[in-house]
Length: 383
Image (cartoon, rainbow, N blue to C red; front, side, top):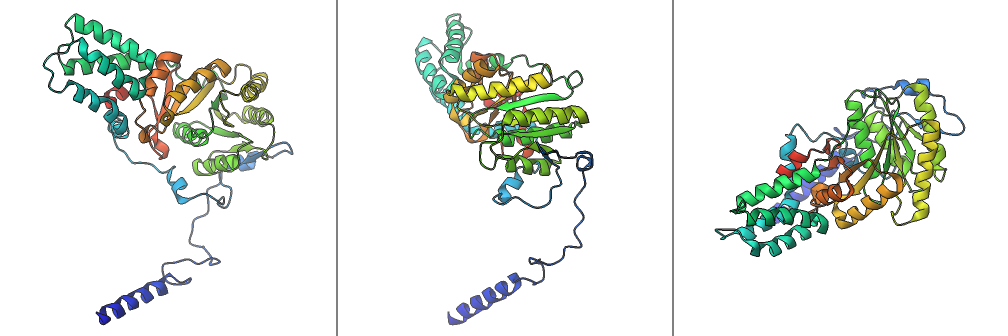
């Protein structure tokens, strides 16, 4: 036993020896890094002469920002070539368990469906965050099908529900016209903590992968570290970021950004705004001011107003969608964090009650986990 302890101690001493600065396989602070390739340059740095009013951070800014963990860097890494439909099904597992598995238990042992199951079915749909209005609409179709003896077993009912949900989700979403509007201005809005800045960064990466020139605008001048967070996204996606110091007027930031984008022929401008409670009228007025300033500088802009919603908030997300649509005229929705919640049914309620199409959904932390929303693929993954 004593020999075993001595051997373990020797192994630990050997391990600590290899971890000291200057040991083989480690680079200590202050050692030269001649072998590392130089960081790529970007033409934006050469073209832009920052004025006193605003600054633009080019994506090759040296150094790392303090406070960012390696986990954040992992967000911009590809999750791999896994099939899209399979990944959606995998990430919607919690929502599927809450809805479909409970339906299976409800129908287990029933040879024939009748109106007695309607009350229990109503409870399952409402508690799956489909909302009262959407649930009533679905139940109306189910009740009619049972009376007409069209829904004779559980499998047929499941298919009917899936088709009805797909129909509710299939709202017309015109493709973005980047040719007629240059720059195409996208304004991201939403409450605090829904993931707006991260979503804007992922969307910038996606648009750049499509071959479009993108400019990020840090119009969130209120939240601590919001500007720094967007700057890091600019570095990682090789996209320039326009910003001012914290506490500046976000409308002024937006104005200068549009001016720069027009002068340089940028394809897409993505504006990240400060989170604001949908119940605070004064905060919503500030958002309207940003819209007016952008519109005066570039008539017709913003061309898309994307509301970012956190799926984990359930019915509160529906309330936010109503208020923001009424306040600023939301034209599209991005639903984030679907992979970490059992409340994915809220997508159906939002589409049915607001009539605003879902443009993208977030199903994970990787940069390619922001995906265009497909109603058919989503409904199949749900069931």
